[in-house]
Image (cartoon, rainbow, N blue to C red; front, side):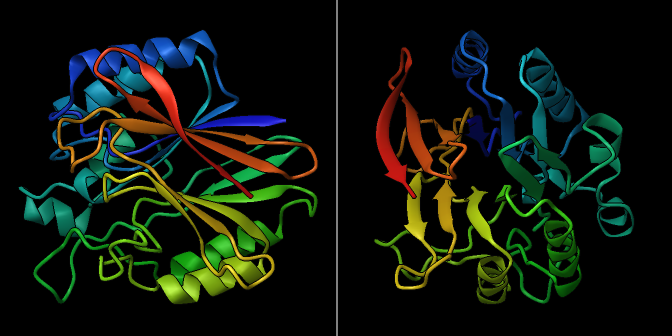
Length: 259
């Protein structure tokens, strides 16, 4: 059995210190096998924000797998943004933007969906490029066949059911079809600051479950409390996901999804 804590949208620089402290204590009291963080560690990609995020991660006892989000590319220094967008990430967080972690039950693979720019005015919109998707699929195919495959990305591949027009990551349809064909069971993402789960294709056998996380530690809430996910994958591949919500004083389970 493998236990994963899914955190997203930490937004250090716009974080809530009591929530941060309580989350560290909660995760360290019962450490998972992996903490997967799906981007937006910072509010504005400032060095002090990256260092606060680094200190938070260093305080956690469990191993970490981390991918960047759109807020982790500087919006202020355009030369750096376009010529070396992950310089601060590499210097403060680590050498990888698409890391991989595995044990005897699961393989968790990072996918970087952030973009330095685009033809539209909203540069926060992400995209799954063909090159990044091809690299991910090659890595998935190289894994032992018995492992449950989990992808961690920042941007959502499906909108909430009650907001069907919500913008999702570019290339999502192509990526979801490829994920199903290459055995991906779960996709962990964030960006919307909303907790929800959806099957990518309810009528298609083997289609992955999408698990979206609310903001774990920031004050930038969108009508929902701070949240993170606790995911358990049994040796037979059964998945149990429980959303943990902050009630102002403690973390507690609020919603359950199974696959």
